[in-house]
Amino acid sequence: MLKQEDGKWLLSAPVADEDVMQLKAGERVFISGKIYTGRDAAHKRLIEALNRGEASPFDLQGQIIYYVGPSPTKPGQAIGACGPTTSYRMDAYAPLLIEKGLKVMIGKGMRAQTVKDAMTKHKAAYLAATGGAGALLAKAVKEARVIAYDDLGPEAIRELVVENLPAIVINDVFGADLYEMGVKAYRLAV
Amino acid sequence: MAIREIDTSLLRDAIASMAVEINHTLPADVERALIDAKSREVSPQGLQVLDELIENAGIAKEGVFPLCQDTGFAVVFLEVGQDVHFLGANLKEAIEEGIRKGYKEGYLRKSICHPFTRKNTSDNTPAVIHTEIVPGDRVKLTLVAKGGGSENMSRVTMLAPSDGWEGVKRFVVKRAEEAGSNPCPPIIVGVGIGGTFEKAALLAKKALLRNVGEPSADPEVARMEQELFEAINALGVGPQGLGGRVTALGVLVEMMPCHIASLPVAVNIQCHSARHKSVVI
Image 1: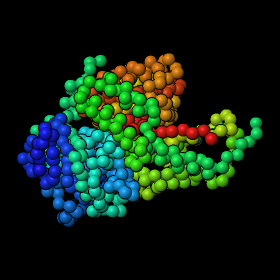
Image 2: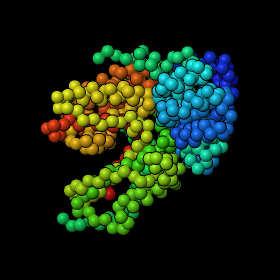
Image 3: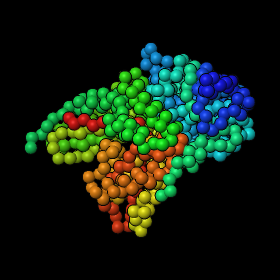
Image 4: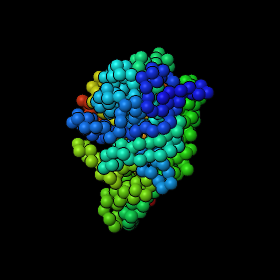
């Protein structure tokens, strides 16, 4: 669900096609509610399970995945530091997840053309959170629990409950790429 | 000169406490560089990112959350005085015990795994340890917590001597451009020029131990640093790659002679979370 409140875009799962259509590259978005974590090893295992015809440990339809491997949770805290990891390592896996209904990915760094094409075709968006702001982003996480692949430690799939997790739209369904736009706007002739 | 005996448990304990400290406290030079960068940045998105990173450093300093969830590969530089005799557990074991202790008790992420099975070693060891024997009876111990995202963007190349400075500059600037948003800019760029294939990489990593904003003492190298700094910041990548003038907080170059056939160059990219500290025992 996507709504605008006091000029701020507020996003929560489940995300519909028409929500994604409104997310334009460069927009700041605040995410609340349930989202799922997954990075390298979890993606590999998830895709292998899907390819064997098994179900995903969580319903992918309309879902938001955050590429993160948090640091261990201290007693009394919801989570450890939890900034985004670099997204290109998930490029090999992302198109299948998008095809299966995944709507939003949160990470940092550039995506492959195959992922951008899948986003355009199946209506999904790629957002970035601030890389290296793991302590600041931890404040937006209210609950965290491992729901699959516990043996992967920091790479296990977690269900997070977040409140106003800040992100910015990098790739939208219209093919715009904020990273390319940014460089174009600020590059100096040398 | 008399032999000085040092029990390796001192190194173990120093490593354990440094592991926790560096993951919660941004070095003063880096924090200053982030604040100074605000005066150079013109992009609103870039300024917002710089503010977030300064705020993040403030939160981490309270000691509850580390600066970044990637608490790094433990890279240790040891400068051992030749008049030192170590007692107790063997040196490597003592250092790795310090890593185990610091990463466990400090709730730091264990990020080291088998290259193919990807099975985590679960205690953030082994460490990468570089040892150098130097004059004197002291031990200088440096711990770096090196993040994977920026390390992945690093490269070594063997240029031809005819490529010269222009070739080196092209390679370094192109690396920062291609790395783009991936290594969490603003970055610090460590450059090693000369030596051999592996020495260039080591020089690049050692360059990253220097203070950001302090040019090399060698005027020739300082000029190179300035030229690379200007060229990288003209790329437009900006904080987090969202566009802007602050792509790099600093460029640090180390140079040494090389073979008459070679011109080795290494670029070690460091994210803004440049976590390292040294102690002398």
